Length: 239
Image (cartoon, rainbow, N blue to C red; front, side, top):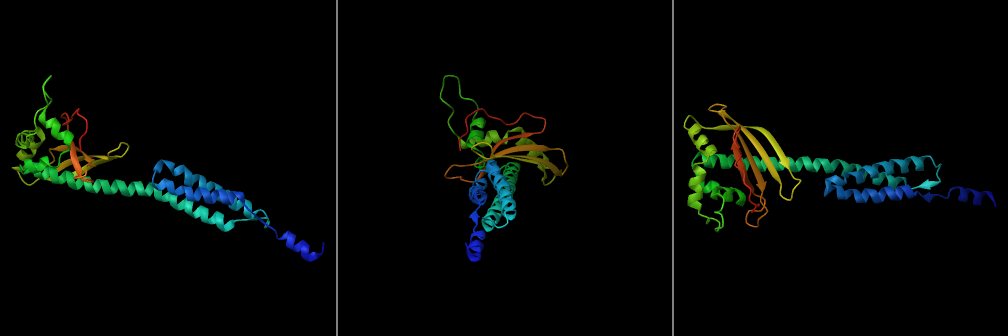
């Protein structure tokens, strides 16, 4: 074998199998954007990519695939960062939407616009206003006027209207909790009145409607004043 053939043989390299595996994990890391719990995939992609780069750099030219491993590392890092960031962005969006709907509903009931406020309630909340069905009898018929009257007589609504006589109400958000573990996103909002005083603390639970006519709209599902029993309901959800 002459010197030229020896040099050519010495320059032969093989593609790193770790680099290929890292690239496949990098592509698979995209699933973390759809299912945040799969963030383990980009984490594994980062680990394998770094290992591949170490092996390639230490192979004295016997292994190739550095660009492939670098691309895999970048893809895994981007997906690994984007997954939790996407959750924060989504929760911030839900908070803004739910806060706007909650404040609109509070304004409606405070101004005694109970018929319009009924349209901002979930089907489950409306059923709770109708009361439990009679034993052995049919459920009560849906009557918007009766429900509007019952809503106007609700403890929270009556208290808001009473406080509004002392001045325009202003609310500060004290707490926010977003729950997306179930099939329907839910948001709990806690408000404190700051005008005319800070005497009222109100908790509202809203859910994101999935019905065709109200898709994406946030509906009030329950409400209560601090220290009082929540306006809860045991019926199945209807949206």
